[in-house]
Length: 314
Ligand code: 6CS
Image (cartoon, rainbow, N blue to C red; front, side, top):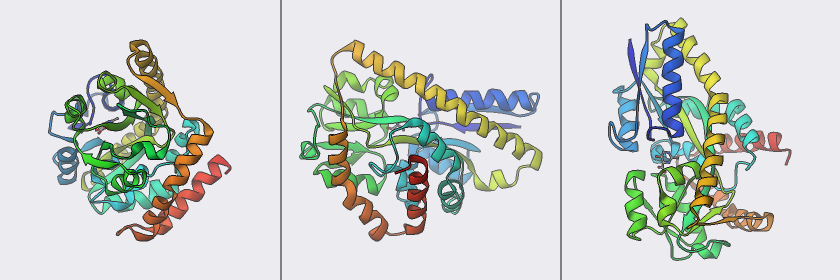
């Protein structure tokens, strides 16, 4: 058998090296009976094209960011909520691995759309970049920020007074360079790798969110696998959760150093007071999400929140 795993990133970047490592391990474990082709961003279209392809069974597996199916699977937007998850990466790792709200309840919601999230993992803390310094929520006023296809992302930046535009990331460098877009969010390794720092003067380590990716399978395909093959897939994905945790950490540390060395982007790290101010400004969006957003399961949100509190002790 040959399977394909499509990713949203390029050679050397976290999602793509994850797919290569998955391929390597599956081939080893099956003595070459199953091979997996890792595909980089662009090979089969944009991120939204790739999501559709997975849903239709055109590829068996995909590394996918929940942000691109936010309109279809409203509960998946929980990952784009600012100041909900902790900033501590070990704690996030534990929550993503163990949360029942995510691994059982949210998984079922995705499966209604033929997407089986087999694991959630973080690509690291996201930072904001912009050509003006953003030090308090009102600094967002009048800025146009690029987001993925998630209505909740719109609400969040709206709460700070910014406007949003959704784009595939492949169009983002040019948009920032031409100043049709003023700002964006991404994990630090990716900001460096996609050279967004070349066209942005400030990078804010804001603590507003981490970047979650999902290892997904087409649901019908996955359910139809022989039990022993499914066990190999599940085992490999569990192993890779710890593997990718270390990989993203390495890449994010190296990315931060490279941005500092390059020197044209000022790095601003938020202190506790700034985090508290932003966190307060976003609370109405947390409430709005729970109470008003169509298709949201408030119980899933409450459950995740209490699971987060258990891990952080807050
Ligand atoms: O900003 C984006 O859309 C891209 N960012 C990352 C870290 N991975 C892929 C994604 O498409």
